[in-house]
Amino acid sequence: MKGAIVMQQSERYEELFEGYDKASAFDQIAKLFFDRNFGTATKSEIELLMFHFYMDALIKKHKAQDGVLDYTASSDYNMGKQLGLPQTTVRTLKVKAQARYPERFDWMKSLASIQSNIRQDGRKVIIPVRDVNLLLEIKNYIVEHGGYIEFESTGEFLKIRIEYFLMLMYETLEIEDRKKFVKEMKKRLQDNDSEEHAFEHMDRKQLLEDVISATSGSLSIITAIVDMLNPQNALVKLFLRLFPTH
Image (tube, rainbow, N blue to C red; front, side, top):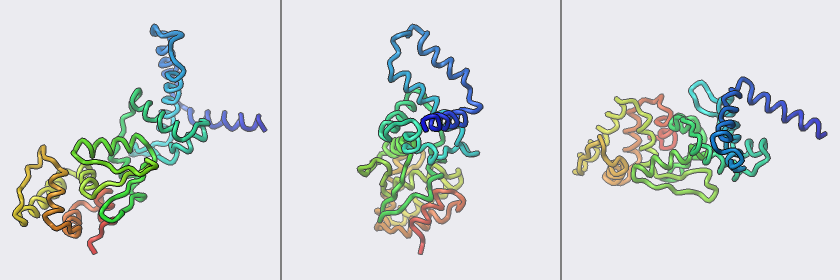
């Protein structure tokens, strides 16, 4: 029985690291030890580097053609089961590895890839996020633009106000759609004798809040504006599904 388990683990290793640049990985390990650090590298440093290799191989193995990672394959549960670690430890290692060995990824595409799991809760949007680094990227974007995040106790999904979701959606729009979106937003403000905002370096959150306030919070008006945009955009399509015109 024990031999069968070892064989399964060996097969999983061979499958995951097939074609992986192991020579480059060895060079990084060697630098950790041989660059005036032999005998002083801590256990946590070594484990973090090994986790980085594992995460890197997982990303390469399960990345779609558009570069988006399959978040099911890299879920905390699946990785923890493979490595023999609690899910909380896996989440911590993901954050540390991204900080120490940053992996560039298009978090907007990643957000769009999980659109089928996003839900509406009254006037808020619930975004389930399996990957902690994707969650942190979304949180950072919203906070940088003056918003705030409401975390549920599990920390595995975000609940955000409509204007913050519209801010995220705006970042995925093509230039012409951005112009159209802003033009219609400004028009709504002018129609209600409200101040017109410049949009180049403006407080986007404030503009959206002003529009929602000026239209007495009517979601139908916001939805009508979004309905003018490219229907093939994943987040435009998602917004119209969550807040339909009828």
